[in-house]
Length: 237
Image (cartoon, rainbow, N blue to C red; front, side, top):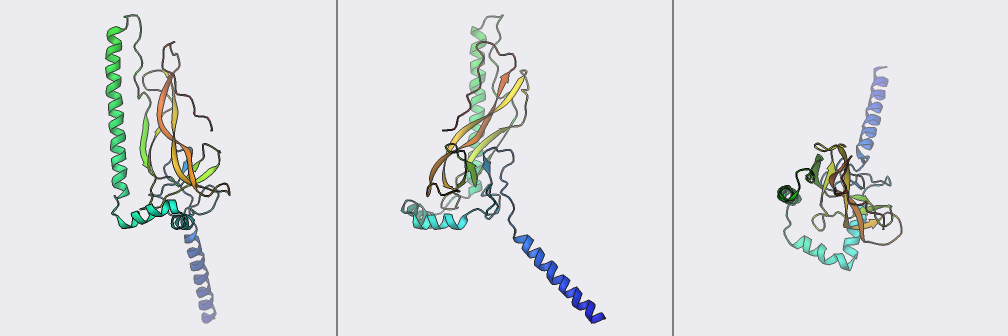
């Protein structure tokens, strides 16, 4: 009886171990940075085999084959192996520092414009509203998937460090209402040109535009005639 129980226990242990190993090999969805509308995954954060929008792992092997087979990519492939590359997290810090500097310059320019407007505006007129009325969050991402601006379909963004790492800065709205002026905060986007691999048999490899969050603007509820309006939403090409 004891021997039979031992055999059953051993079988249960083997089955549980097999199931655990199988589950551990299952890829998790590509998460990336939270809050992005047209991008998925982050090559610096997610597993290289994470699941994309088409429920298949990121095609690292296919990208590697394309790098070796393409004459266009072969030069960059060799140079990436023969030269020292900068740590991607150092590049990330440089990008964030440059973005912060740009924000500071915009704030300074806004103050100068306000000072000039105040000196030229009659007392019974309101000066223009300042920028950065909406709370935002910015960071970098090396996206693995995106939505094509030209076709509206998901595309695979090529990420292969150290040969090619396409890292961008994004800035997303963190509030729906403006802080100072009564109005609503609206997300803005800018098109980035990425090297991509379409998920379907459309083309081999090439470049395509994908929208990336670029900031947040305030649309006053009671805007005057000369109030600055939001930039138009970029239509699909």
